[in-house]
Length: 314
Image (cartoon, rainbow, N blue to C red; front, side):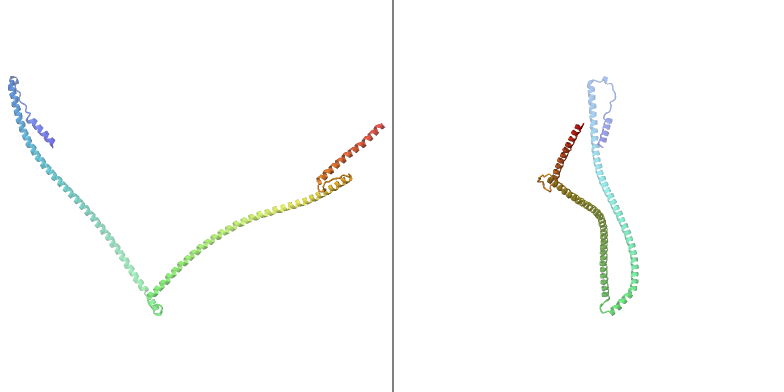
């Protein structure tokens, strides 16, 4: 706003104060006249400027006052706008609360309506149940009369409720016994299942053991057959050993007889033991070799005279 006022006053000053003087023939004026003329123009300009300043000051004061009024009005307007905005906000808040309350009331009304419908349905169910119970009561009244007649005939109970309590006690006892029996039956079934499982395992184990026994029986039979073979072989070995022992005994006896005969015939004295058959055989071998050499020498000597005789004959 201040910029606009400044532009306005500047334009007015240029329009009113800067008045162009009419063209004159300055060539005919003296310097003093020109100076006076300039002074006069300056005085007029200063007077006009002062007048304009006073007008400007008055207008500025008026504008300042107007500006203050406008600011005051603006403050009032702001205050009014603030109050109006607050009023709108309060009205909006009240409207929202009213709408929320109306919604809650509608929801509550619908809920109460549903509750009323549910209570009506429940009332109908209760009425139906009441009628059924009344019918059941009429139907069961014969049992009440029967219990009353039983109470009149017995001396154990004084009231019908005592008989009912006794009956309930017996029923509870029976139920407990049935539960225990059921538990025992379940336990028996579990033990039976365990027994069956154990029997199956035992049967499988027995079959496995029988298979092992059969395998071991086969091994035993094979071992027995091998034992028989080895016993037969052993008997054969024993028989062969007996025959060899007998043959060896005979050989040793023959060797001993031959050794004694040779030493006796050849008049050889020997300190060889009769049990040392190898030395006896060695001695016999040497004797036979000596006899063989002697025989060869004798045979050679017999052939030599015959050759000499033949040569003489020729």
